[in-house]
Image (spheres, rainbow, N blue to C red):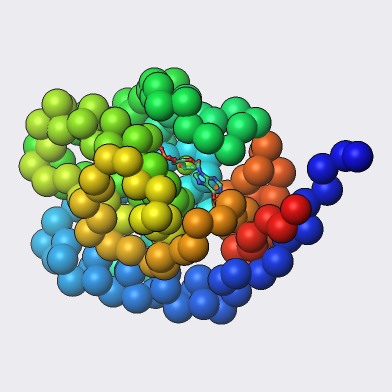
Length: 175
Ligand code: IMP
Ligand code: MG
């Protein structure tokens, strides 16, 4: 039989919007007088990034980084590569990484190490969803939207095999 996932709403678009607003207020307060460079990790965080920046009253700049991804599997291979780096220099900048989800933590800790080597003035992490039950590498999250259960989630940028990124809410996939 063909695998036909049935998405069920876990976090509604209203709840997401409220969380984005709360995160934006915290970020605004912490970056007063600064011009942060926000780095979105493609592809999953582009929807979150788009909503977040429109709630931020700061003279910010944007970059996008593409890391090697899971492909069609649900498990991280444990090997991460930068597929497309940032052109904007990182050195001496206030960097805020924007990510959709931290699961094992392997992907984001690789990226944080990679960015740290470029000697930013500061380096912080804003994450929409955190799945702490599967963590294998400790990750310091500075701004967090939601803690989620140990289930595969999709929507609001998050995909399963490249599908469901366009869904407005966050859903769990029930087999
Ligand atoms: P980690 O390296 O295990 O922390 O995985 C992080 C990356 O895996 C995220 O940036 C997502 O692209 C993907 N990922 C992990 N869990 C999920 C999920 O539940 N739904 C969709 N993507 C996920
Ligand atoms: Mg991602």
